[in-house]
Amino acid sequence: MKFKIQKKLNGSLGRVGVITTPHGEIHTPAFVAVGTKATIKSLNPEQVREAGVEVVLGNTYHLYLQPGDEVVCGAGGIGKFMNWKGPTMTDSGGFQVFSLGVAYGKDMSKILKVTDPSLLIPERFDDNDAPRLAKIGQDGVSFKSHLDGSIHYITPEKSVQIQHNLGADIIFAFDECTSPAEDMKYQEEALERTHRWAQRSLEEHLKLNDSPLEEYPLGGGGKIIHPGASATPQEGNKPALFGIVQGGREESLRKQSAKIISEINVDGKYFDGFGIGGSFAKEDMSTAVKWVNEILPEEKPRHLLGIGEPEDLFMGIENGVDLFDCVLPTRLGRNGTIYTKTGKIIIMNTKFRNDFGPVEKDCECYTCKGYSRAYIAHLFHGKEMLAGTLASIHNLHFIVNLVKKIRQSILDDKFFEFKEEFLKKYIHPGASATPQEGNNTLHF
RNA sequence: GCGCCGGUCGGAUAGCGGCUAUUCCAGGGGACUGUAAAUCCCCGGCCUUCGGGCAUCGUUGGUUCGAGUCCAACCCGGCGCA
Image (cartoon, rainbow, N blue to C red):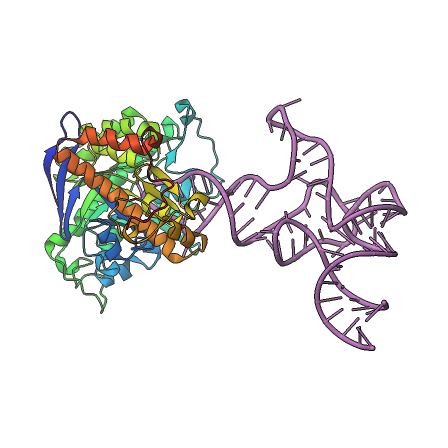
């Protein structure tokens, strides 16, 4: 993997670049489509590609449980398995430490809403008896499978081994995503753990990458041999590893983490790029990203993990983020919420049942070129499978292309103008005319 | 006309003498940020000072401390017999 910066955004940390992987280029900043179980839910690869997506991300935890990383390896890696010809990434399972751990069964998401930031630092009350599917141990994390209840112990080494079997172009170190509601003491402990795990992830990664090709998982003659495997990797096909910065909402911890993660090495070999992780309070996100990106080495790509609302994309890019991934475009799409330039709409609302215009008049996506709001609303009311597909196509196109437009605006020296113009309409649609709503004519 | 069965929210249901009448669907609104998610939450008779208050199980009476539940008559629907 190579990363080349083409242009920097004046007066900020932002930049435009290109990541070159064995399976193609990623023009950064870029939005990564999330395909947890080696599929972008409800979409086939052609639809994903047509929406403008360059790179997709699968998940270690899910694919390890089902169908098993050996199967994916046997298929020739995640890309071949899912028939995605472009670049691929896998997450390490670190997020599941959070979502299946402290967040399990609670009304707790990756983004915390708070009006009073002081509420974020309560005492860490001891609720170790609360039901959870992930428990953090000395060396790693024990997961109770959400599928069949079986117990699995994931260590940094195990996560990296699984990811090498999955065979993505870019993989992540195993980390612990903490809740911002944790107190300082816990954040420090967790951060120290994440750093130890980062070191061990890198060691295991290099060990695997340095192993002879014939012994490498996807090397054809390696430790996992499958008759049907069609993998013919070359040396350059081995993955790049990104380390993950954590540290909650504490400036000192975030900065410390950025420094340590960027300095971690094995015999002079460092991480190829970086992830910025954590569960955030929305208000804290921009400062946290800025603290971190001021310290991370400029010449390596940075991935803001799991973030992807339009306003977050502007914030991240302005503060030096190169990659984003987020489930929102597809999850919102399946759940009936659709992005428009004047804000999100809930397509099942009564007012759209007779709205025969497209979701967005000037949108170039497949959905907008052929289908009306009324039809999509009808599909959702009828619980038809196509509903989630059409909505996901539009949402993915909307977000991916927003990032592309932001990229172009930097190249054109118009980032700040574009940001102001877009957010004004998106956040405060009432400020300008809103032709999107109540549009009852055909514009195909 | 006689006999039997049945009438509970827009629809379908549970409820067999006891506290706030159940659940599903349809309807309305909302949430969702490295996917435990084509998922989840809220609303749905009237009034409210947001604490709650008053109604309501076809109708009208009755029995009872207490009735959607038991009894009677009536209304409506289904089936059977004439």
